Image (cartoon, rainbow, N blue to C red; front, side):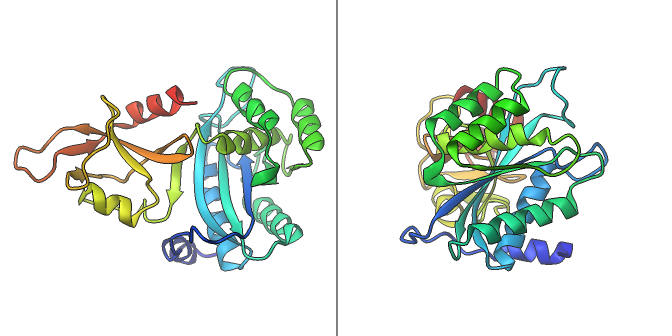
Length: 273
């Protein structure tokens, strides 16, 4: 897929229909990159757009999950995994699996250790969530990941290199399913939000579920104006995409709030994991 096709595929996606009852799947991917290539977050968004254009599944969101950073764990830069949440167009798991694996085999960087895990939302158990939580604090093994995935009937596959990304891929779907971990890197409308917007408009036109003051945790008034530069980065809390802002006007009453800086956003992400 050419770059402009990828961008058009993402930006043209309609908001999800809350009444749609077609099955939801989670797709965890990890270690698709090297130090010179685009990161796994890029591949996750691009894969989501590809699934949409191929009429396999509609992309609901993409989340980034920070895992344990330790010298015993090989990783490219930050040791984070990505998880796509998708709604199937037709309940054809083999089509989903084949399309995802073909894409990652084709696009993963030289020297990567790509892994993928796919499971229906309802098939992700507390044991998988616990595995994800453990992956944030301790060194886990491929054998542990494979044993758990087999026991839980989840598709887990290594695609390139050592297959080490299988661990993060399984952890990613567990953490996303928990609803209390991760930063949203794509939801409808989030990356198009620019400039100064009222909180109510931001909620109405994006996949953000709530906007809260970073210091007090209270909800921001719908009329309050927020500078969303460069673009909103909500975090997952209790199953909702929550955007944290700080009270900081520009002195000319153009806006009352700014996005918290990335370090504070990461603190909120860690504190609710």
